[in-house]
Image 1 (cartoon, rainbow, N blue to C red):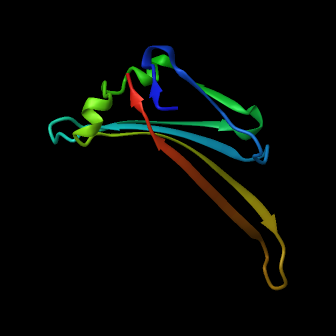
Image 2: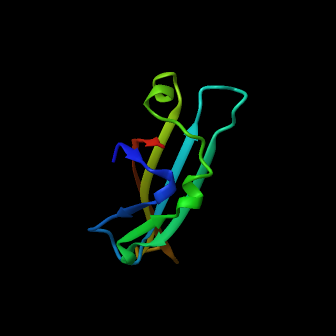
Length: 111
């Protein structure tokens, strides 16, 4: 995914994830201009859903930034992460919880 059409929204798909986990979808547009603040969004979906559509109204809240502004230093990104908790037992431990998280992202242009 190199370019995201903000007015159409975008569907993110995943597979091979523990259905009991949560998937985090994040996006940011941060122009390299101190007068323009970065804009971010954060969405969460149950991993068992297998996909999530970022609505157009969320993407339209991001400043327009394409290849020309990315070259001048704008940070544009979309990332997907998985987080969950697993219980475990061990001698001498009353309650054991293991929290895990993994994040993968890429640069994109929001047009």
